[in-house]
Length: 412
Image (cartoon, rainbow, N blue to C red; front, side):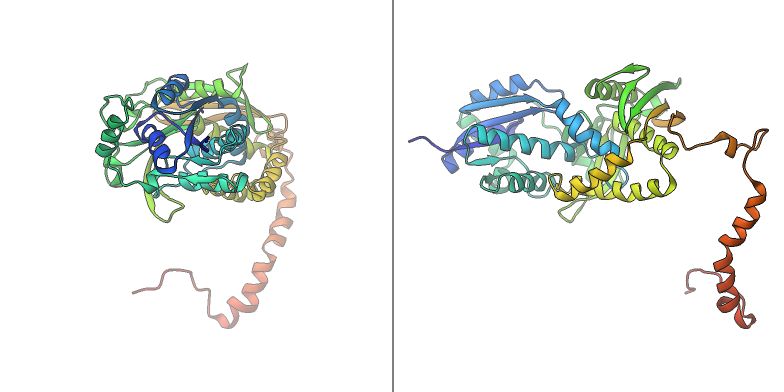
C-alpha cells in the first residue's frame, strides 16, 4: 500500500536532513523535499541531490528569484514597508512565497501534509502555518523541531544511525537566514543588547570605519515606485539588487542593529545586513517627497506601517493586504524619476532627485530673482490660520487675566 506524501521545506542543513527519516518513522509518510532559490547564494541542485541521498522519494528545486522580487520585494518597497521603521523584512517576505509554492507542490504530488523546520519561539512558524491554513486548510502541518526534543549532538547521532551525510563543519555561534533582499543574524553574543556586534557577525558589509575614504555615487531610476534602471542602464530586479548589495556592502552600507518586537510576544535582538534594501528604501522615500502631495504622503506613512506589520505577522494572503496594495499601486502612479545616492562610510545619503511629475516649483521656493510667491497673500493666510487659536485664547485660556500655563512635566 502506497504511503501518503509530505512536502518538506528543505535547506540541506542538519535539522531538515534529519527530518527526512524522522518524518518517515514518526508519521509513516514519504518525504518530498522542496528547496527554493531566493538568492541565498546556495547551490540548490546540490541540495536536491543530497535530499535524495538522505531518503527523500523525490526532491524539488526551484529558482524563484524573479518571482520573489517582482511579486513580493517590489510591492513592499512601493509601500515603504520597514518593520518598526528599520527591518526591510527580507525573511518575512520570503516565507509566504515558499509556503505558497509548497502548497502548489503538494497539489501536484497529491500530498497530504506539509512540513517545515521552524522552532516554537520564532516568527517563521506563524508565517508558514498561517499561509498553509489559508491556502490549503486540508493539509496537515508537521513541525518536527516543535515536536522532538533532540539536542544538536543527538541529531548528529540520529543522522549517523540513518546514514545521513552531514558535513563536518564548525557550528556557527549564530542563527543565520538570508535571501536576495537581506541577511539576518541572531543568537550567540548578540543576545545581549548591550554588547556591540563582533566582526564575525557580518558577512555582506565591510566595517564602515575600514570602508573606502572615497564616496561612490549611484543613480537609480524609478517607474511607478519600482526601480527600473541603475546608473543609466535598464536592469531587471534581481541583477539590480545584486549589484546594489555589492556596491553598498563595500561601503559598509546596510547594517541594522534592532531590538524588535516579535509576533510571539518577546523582544529579540536582531542583526541585519541589507545594502540594496537600505539604498532603495532611502531613494524611494526621497522621490516620494518630491512627487506626492502632502496629504497623500502623510496617509502613505500610516499605510506603510500597516503594510510592514501584516508582512511581519504572516498575513500576506489576506484581503486586507489586497485592499492596502490597491491604495499603494494607485499612490505610486506618479512616483517616477531619478535619484542620486552617495555611499560613504556606512551611510546612504540622497543628494539629488528629479522627476517630470515633481511637485517642487523653484519659482515658488526661490528667494532669488524670479520669485513668483505672493508675499502679500501670506498676511491674510496667517490671520485666518491662527484665528481659531486666537479666539479660544481670548474666550477661555486668557480669561480673567490668569495668563497661559506652559505645558510641562509635573514636579516631584
